[in-house]
Picture 1 (tube, helix red, strand yellow):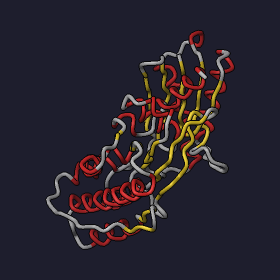
Picture 2 (cartoon, rainbow, N blue to C red):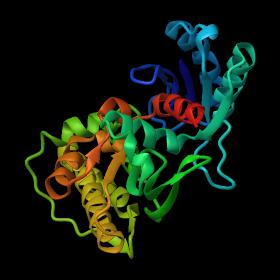
Picture 3 (cartoon, rainbow, N blue to C red):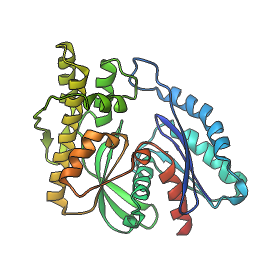
Length: 306
């Protein structure tokens, strides 16, 4: 049995993997109405409160634990750090010490990649190069993922948003319209009610996109009295077209490597539909696309096997 812990900025998560099947328990952090995020101190407090109940719910038996893993940082690069991950680290260290199982540390981003591969039944891709788009509240990046003996995989940024991130654009537009944070599901629902069509040319610089314009335009639409449905569809179309153009340019530069999309934003139906129509890409299943500890538990399994 392999245990994974992930305490991202908005979700407390614990997962158990037996080599085939995953049990995942998670709890979204609470954001006050009208606010667009959490201070790290508030996130740490909520994780600390949530974690014991999740561990109890998952019924961990220390005598059967082979290895423990935890996301200790956002990315596997120097300087990548967020205090909220300390809660996961502390719990993982405790479980490892009391069970005698080895402890492995990786990044939240690698967890997303491995959870996505598991959800599409393609964990074999860790043995070759592929492209992974990680698109969420704090990340809009395209990564060149390659095998690595020590870290299982390395993920190098080859394209990204130069300013606002996709999830930030969605949440800022949603909060402006009075929606509950995080706003992705509600924006998705509203966008499907709009009959308006938008022709949007993405703002690009090489392989990178810029999303700052979507916030300003959405604000102007809202102040002009346009409907929430149309604003939602505009925001998601803007983001979708930007991801579409990034994908096209990456294929032109890196060839026809396998492409996978992970991150909470990629569970959006409008974006998935547009990308699916044009590219032979993999999408992580929605429940494994958003923040979770599943990929971290899989990391424990893969490291233990090595």
